Image (tube, rainbow, N blue to C red; front, side, top):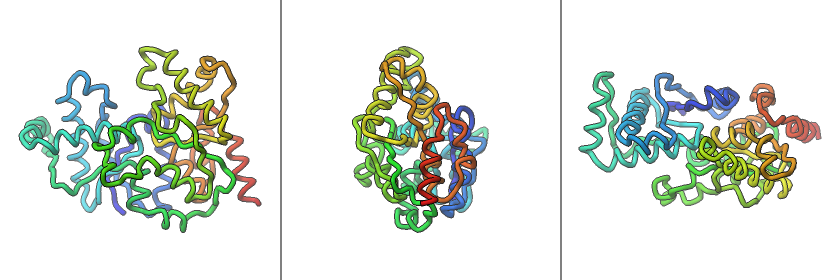
Length: 300
């Protein structure tokens, strides 16, 4: 399956292990990714608060670049924040042809234009894995079933709300996809209160205490539910849950120390890739216990 590929800003900056692990996982699932290395930031929901036309123009440019990839079925991203922000922009562009022409006017100097034909799509890797690759194919590619590994799913905000914009009318189970995938690769999904809640990242620059208390609460709930690790499709959530975890523990007044995996890393483990290949030594909260458990399961 050939795809235009938008990795997002964070995966190539703060979390390069996410970008690297996706590159390793893709061929295992017969994905040909054509990276949009000239694409720009999605705005992460922030730019739109100040200048909607600017953020729509930025994302229309990315969409136009993706549409130029010959033979691509659509566009894939690995950041659920990108998915949410881009879905919002695409909804506005698709709903108003006059506005779309106006925005495309900003792209003319580069010879670009975003065309709405009703068939072009942009999907997070999680959605693509379930809807287009399919869980049966995923199961058939598993080389290292993760039996006994207890994984707490953490979706983040941008792929669960608002449901209408995010296609839940057509795909009502999107809010359960992480659990479905975790089960498909042999692991055990952990049910806990925070899986669909905000990680706190959007307010960290304005109110650090609130942000880290929120992150710490989710991590503590996952630990209390006996999770070995969390997994998220959002690198911004990963920053707050992994990088900020040592500080978050102070705000909830307890030890946390629970690993947080990127979604492609978890998939890569099941597909037989080694932790070092997946960049699992790059995390702030060490993943040694998860690596050890996976190795023991494989040996058994």
